[in-house]
Each structure stands twice: as structure tokens, then as C-alpha cells.
Image 1: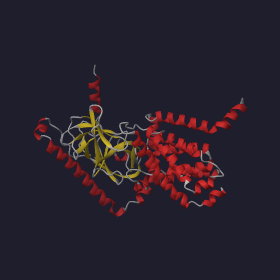
Image 2: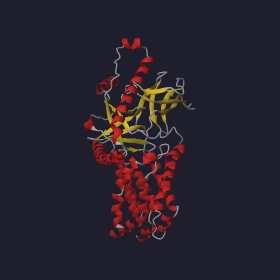
Image 3: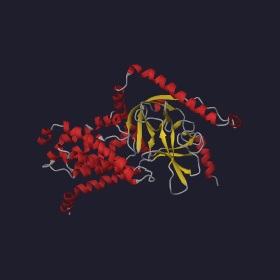
Image 4: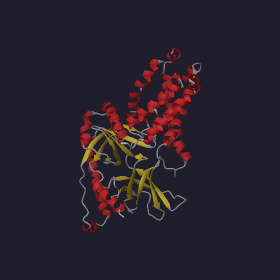
Length: 277
Length: 164
């Protein structure tokens, strides 16, 4: 018995090892959402990011760093302000007063630097040198002076991981600023697309795409990119529009995290509304 | 060989730092080479298929943990890439592999398999043509990784390989 098992192992050990490891990988894939897995991940990237930040600092010129940071902060604030003003210009200000919409032009910004980037075609992530101790929370939007870069996904005490817009797992409700058409934007592996838009809807090339107030993740208007026009999908009743992001994900170094998170009260209220019998 | 076991793990961490800090600067249209995979193929050819499969698993696990990507995706793809690279383990031909373009072809093959498997385990939008996706997410980064492996072979002291 033992000899036959030894023979099997000797003849097929490569395949046995492969099959066992594949099974372990598949089991691990199914454990991704478990809190323990998230905790281990956050611990691992937090420890590693400490080393990465040292390397990252070498590339940073310390003299102009603080000045750059101030200017970038100013730029980001101005970008938000301009974006807000554009929104006000398009919407009817009288209606807004009647509806008592909240003037939310002041957003607290937390500065951070990107210390490492994991650039793959499907799951782009950045590691920031700011974490729980800096006031970051999962779900906070990350911007630079060009526009939205992504959303904070996991955090440790001093570091955090950002899911960028070029990540298949991040889907955002956005709208065409000119026509007001809203839809879900996602990264399909090669392009940012605004999907499931009825074919009759009006989206022109060059239209500014911003985050929608309907979004449960980012409900303030932040520029995302420019529409490249509708793709004219042949089958079905829906169309999709390609979006060229304003932000340059390769060159991005310094970012700001907007200190807002999804309102649990609002989400809970909406959930109760939909679940009522 | 035992020193290989230690070095393959020790070298992983500085290489991952380079992969996440410096390599993004040389990306072309979002396509980046995979240094970890080059190292995986290198050590697999030196130490055998079982070793390569296990090393791929360990590299994938560490990569998923540290970069915050979907835990298990790189584990699976790199395990299979290591297994495939193991088919090229042959003590008599090792020198030929490391000295010629064959190493580049092995890296290319393993990189394409690694990237395609990784793509399948991410929630990919199948509205886009599968052919285009495989080309953009498998072949293109695979070519870039293979091209980069050329430099490593050019600068690697060949004699030490033969002696080991």
C-alpha cells in the first residue's frame, strides 16, 4: 500500500502538487470578503508600505515638496470650486433654492502621496502614505488637480490602498454634465465606459462626465473625464459611451482624499424603503 | 540549490518594491512588465517543476497580500505559470536556455498564461471582444515582460549558472 502510494507520488508528484495548490488558491479566492482575510491583507500591505515609502521618498525632492503640496491643494480646491460653479451654471438656481439644496462647496481635504502603484489591466491600485491615523476611511474619494482618481478601499494605521477608476471592481454612478444623463461607469479592462444607457439618450463627444449626486459612494460633483461619444452597440436596447479620464494615473504622485464617506443613515433609509412590504 | 531556495524568497521583496515603485515609470499605455514572473521562470528552470509550482504559489500569495489585489488570483495564475515553466527544466539544456532567446520565449509563454488566467478571475466585462482582451491583457504585457527578461539574461554571469 505504502509502496504503491510512493510510486504514485514519484510518478505524478508535479500534478499532485499543482492540483493541491490550485484547490488552495480557489478556496482562498472564495475567502476574500471574510473580515479575517481583509485584516491580514491590511496588515501585510501596511508593513510592506513602510519600506516602499522609503524608496518613494528618494524620488521626491524634499525642497519643493512642501510648496508643491500647497499648490496642489490649492489646485484641487479650485478644481472642486470650478466644478461646483459649472454645476450651478447648468442647474436652475431658483429651483435649487426652493429645494433647499445644501451648499457643499467646502470639502475637507487630506493630503497624501502615492508610494506604490500596482498597475495591471484589470485591477489598478495605489498605496497611499496616509491611513487611519490621518483620518482616512474606506469609501473616501481620492482626487488630484485633474479629477477623481479612485476610492479608498482598505486602510491600515498609516497606509491605505486606493481602487482607481481603472479597476473592474469599482463602479460609480456618474452623469453627463450637459445633458444630465446618468449611468453606471465601470472599467472594462481596456476602457472606462458608461454602460446601459438607452439608445435615445443624448451623450455627445466632448461632454464632461462628473460624479452624480445619486452615487452612494461619491455624491459630490467631481470631474471624471470627457465623453468620447456613444459606441452604437448593435444588439439590445442599451448603448454605452466611452470616457477618457482627465486624471493621468501613471504620473499621479500627490493626491487628496476628500474626507466624506457614504452616509450610512441615507443608505439605511433607502434600503428600508426598498425592502418594505 | 539550497541557497536558491533562500535567495528566491529574499529577492522577492526588493523586486516587488521595484515592481511597485519604479516599473510604473516605464509602463507603456498602462502595460507593465512583470519582474516577479521573470524571477519565477528563472528559478523554476534552475530547480525543477515542483519547486516552480510551489514558488509560483508563494509569490502569488505574497503579491496578492501586499498589493491588495484579489486574494487568490495571482496565487492561481503564478502557480500555473511556475508549473508550465517547469516543463523547461532540464539540466543538460539549462545553459542553452539561459544563453539564448529561448529563455525569452519561455518567459513570454508563462507571462501570457499568467496574465490570461489572472484576467479570467477578475470580474471582466465580456461585452468587449475576448480576442481583443486576450491580446491587450495577455500578449502585450507578455511581450513587454519577455523584452525586459532580455536584459537580465544579457547581464547575468553565465559561468555561475553552469557551475551551479
